Image 1 (cartoon, rainbow, N blue to C red):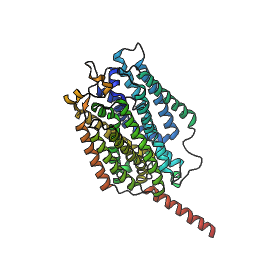
Image 2: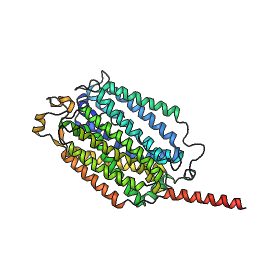
Image 3: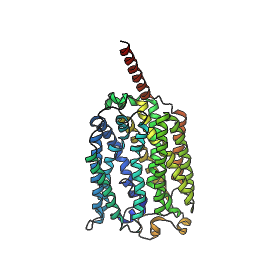
Image 4: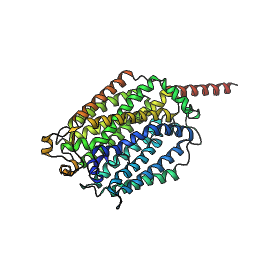
Length: 437
């Protein structure tokens, strides 16, 4: 929720803190930038000290960062200091994110049976998008002014939710592992962090998954960052942009639930990823084309929802498959590097798309925009609506290349499933031998 607080109200944020659109986007971009170096730290902490240590570190950093953001809107703070303080709070929360985002696959592997792992991964992974959904609903509903005087109230609500999470983690997470391992693979020792990295470097299947998953995550991140800026120049309001973000996440949670349950029963990781990726790309293409048109709210909402349904359907499955194809590499290492890939590609694509955005045509400006309730048209506005046709086409091309790579080159070898079957067979043989003796 802290990450995406300002994306649904980018124009109002620019007015409140007296900054341009790029600096507003940096408030989201900092999460991607911090995830790269701290992603490696998170993988090491998870694999060395366990789930509890990683979750506690994340919860406290996030809570402190969320609390610090409120200082930026205190009375008496110099206007020139407001944005740097806000960015510092965002940065602390950004450093916290990898320590919990990298945890779902390890949680699923250590606490759940083999036929429950994909579902468990899905439930844990969806906490992040549900936070995004909440921010997309709460923030535009609370921030309705042109000058952003109601932003402080929204920040305090976000802080309250963050600190509640901090307390729940502190007093509710008591152990990193269950008393009894649920599967044979959970009993085995994982590779050490450096040894795991060396094995991953030689795994071709993993790198196909890593690059293409990262591309998909980068496209999703760019949508969540730029959604308001894409829609408002064509007359769509901040509230509608927030609704689209919420629908994307809500549809995504539904898609992830269905895919998680299906894969737990069928073990068809690759098939689900390929189908979901292709459908998500088609829905994304349709949305970006509809977003160029005015008065197409129903179609825009429909296609962004479908993008969420299919895009999120492959998220937990990709995380689980990364563990399958790299076993016995530690879960946080293999799945964590997927997220690092997405963050690196996300940084690149956000910067490129921002650079490619063009000034809005005189015709569109004359018709009017939905940016900041029309306030951005005044002479003192900090936010300038832009034309996003070219950036959207570039993002579409990037997504098409990624899905072609997935469809043609993803041919996984499920090493963890094979190892568990082998261990189970050996145990059955040993029991049979003991009975005969």
